[in-house]
Image (cartoon, rainbow, N blue to C red):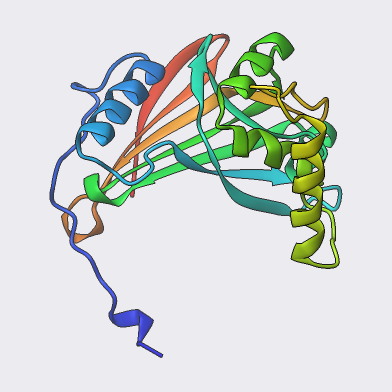
Length: 213
């Protein structure tokens, strides 16, 4: 195995300062996200979602950001999945975006709540048919005996909805909106003296600080 202690990268592409960053972290996120799109970052909307289970242990996985609505970060999933069950017990969660091509990271801490069902229905029916079928097929996070069970179930769903151009949204599938309480922007800098600007919501207003790397 390669000696992990020898793996190093030097960061020098940009800088970040309180005097140039937006007063509104949502605007700053949108600015950086647009720059990630322009830089052709691979799946710039991929984000690590961390939740807390009933034993107070964190669990993480990658999900996709599907929008920012009313200053909240939106993603979709199966409500009966592990993350769905954990969010129902404890809505506290964290999101992390990492864009190595730009040497940037964004950390978000907040609380999640289910989004509007009508909007979720519209989004679900805009997805590719295969994705719609998969949402009906998979008992997400449940133990299954074999891959064949999924394949057989997918065929059953296809037959059930044969002739329908779009499928109705399953009741167990929908969206979550993460209301941010902390948003931190990280820009890689030389010699590990990285730039970190953190926004914290205090009495409904954003307060920003520079953090030591």
